[in-house]
Every structure is written in structure tokens, then in C-alpha cells.
Length: 191
Image (cartoon, rainbow, N blue to C red; front, top):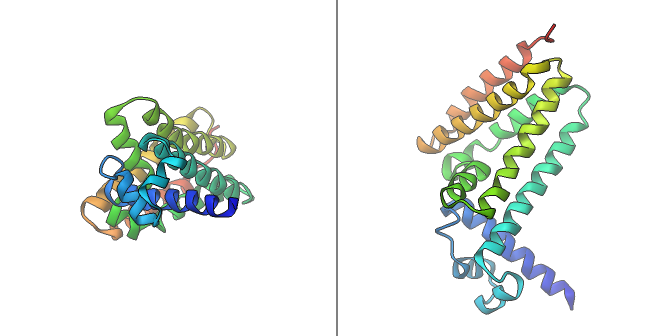
């Protein structure tokens, strides 16, 4: 009996994830999510009382995906390899980013315009990335520069994501990520 409930909740969240990525959070309605998930609209309210509830669930889902990915990269033996793997991961999403924008940056930017707790929760996705990268740069011997390097890398990736989407040109992502990998590989320990 519980299996269908789990399936419906998952279908709703997957539909919300897809639609929010394609058209934005504010443009996505509960009716859109119900239709995309093949769950009757009346049943949506059983799982998520409000659209913000779906927003929180979506952000938690994306945050968990980030945590899982960071854990996978943590298994790589060297911090430089971990940072490069993160950059290559972004590059691997270039086609999707060209079509719909960065799944993290887009929702954070949109929600921040309205402010409030949902926007604050979304910002945690960037906080997780920045913190993880800062640790990697510290392990790489960058010392006091680690926080700035972390900020630079995330800023560059978000900037190229915006341009890749704006110009619908995945090659822009490849050009910038190649430069960022060169930069990371050229870093030497801060002495």
C-alpha cells in the first residue's frame, strides 16, 4: 500500500525538478506538476500542501544530489583531481545548460528575487559547493587564498553557465572549463 505513495511522491518531485529546470519555479504551477507526473491535482495536496513545500523538497533533493557527488569526488586521491572532476562535471552538463540554464544558479537567482526562507534554503546549494571547494584548495596548499579561489571557480562556472544558456552555445562551456582546468593545474602550494 505504501509503495504507490512513494511512487507518486517521487513522480511529483521528478516532475517538479524537470519543469522548474525548463521554465523556472515561478512559472511552474501545481497543475503543471500534476499533469507532468500523471498524478491527479487533488492528490498533489496530499504530498505537498503548497508550492513552497514542493520547492523545499526540490531544493533538498538537489542539495542531496550535490552531497552525493561531492562524496564521490572525495574518493579521488588528490585535491587537484577532485577540483578538476568538479569542473569536468559542469562541462558534461553543457547541452542541458545551453537549453535550460544551470539547475542551481537558475533557481537561486529566481528565488532570491522574492527573498524569504525558500531563497535562503536554495542558497545552501552554493554554500555546500563553496565550502567543499575551499577545503580542496586548502588541501592543495593554497592557504589564505582558498576561499577566494573557491569563490572565483564557482563564479566563473556560473558566469559561463549564464553565457552558455544566453547564447545557446555549449562550446562556450567547453572553452571556459578548459581554461579553469589549466588554472587549477598551474596552482602551486602557497609558501
